[in-house]
Length: 382
Image 1 (spheres, rainbow, N blue to C red):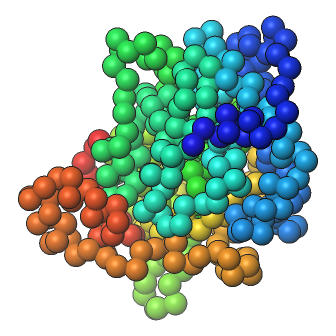
Image 2 (cartoon, one colour):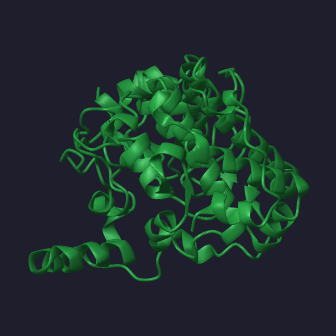
C-alpha cells in the first residue's frame, strides 16, 4: 500500500513545491521535520503521560483524527519529488533513516500493527512510499536494501531474515542511491516495531554522529541489566537485549562461548559504548558478573518516544518497556511469543528436506531453545 499516494488522494492537493524543496539539503530536512512532528503528535495523543505510545485501536483512532496528522500525511507527498541521487552519503543515511521511522509509525496508525511477530516481514513489505527517483519502495526494502546495504543482515527470526533481504549489485541503476556509509550505530535510531526496539530518532547530517552515540547510550543504559541470584553461591548475571545478538555482526567481530565474562569483544564494545561511571560500565570493565544471557525481544506494539540527548551517567536509567506498564487490554500479549515451538531436531529434519519449508516453519514457530542462549552461536552473520 502506497501511503503517501493513497493519503494524498484523500486530501486537498498540495501546490507544487518551491525549487528548494527538491534540493539535496531539503530532503533530509523535510524527512527530519516530518518524523519529529509525527513523534510529537504520538506523544500528545497516545502516551497518556508516559514517554511511550501504545498502538491500540483507540490510540490509532485518536492520532488519525488529529488535524496535525492530516497535515503530515499531506506533506509526505513532497517525498515523491525527492532526487536521492543528489544527496551526499550522510544526507542519504539521515533521510532514509527518518523515512523508515516515519513510514512505520504512519502505517501503524493507519493500518494498525502486525497481529503477530510472524507477520512482521509481510507487513513491512506491504506498505511503502513513492520516493522520487526510487519510485514506490516498501518499508522492508527501504530499511534493508537502501539504508543498511553495507551492514550485516540482522539475525532475526533465527537467521531467516536473510532469505527476504535484497542487495543491489553495483551495476543496478539504484545502487548509487543506496547508503554507502558504514554506520553501525544506525541500528539505535530505527524503531523496528516492538517494545524492545530503540526509539525512532530524527537525524540531521550535521549532528547525526553525536545523536547516534547518545541514542546508543540511552538504549544500552535502559536495556542492559545486572541481576543477582538469590541462591547462595551463584553469582550475578549480565542480561543483554536480544538486539545485540541480532545486530552483533555490526558491533563486534565474533562472540565466543564462555563460562564467564572474560575479555570478549562484546565486553570491549560495552566499555566503549557505555558512559564511565555507570554501573553497567563498571561491570563490563571489572567482569563482576559470572554469566551473560540475552533477554527475549518483546514485539508488543509499544514505541519508546523518549527525547534523546546528552546522558548523565549518575542518573538512574529508566526501565525497559513492558506490556505490564500499560493497562489497555487491546494490546495482544500473545504477540510477545508464539504459542507453539519447534524442537531443534524438527528444524534439522526440515532443513534437510527443503530449505524453503524450513525457513517458513522457523518464521511461524521459532525453536524452543533459541530464546536466551549465552554466546552459543559462533558462525558469522549471513
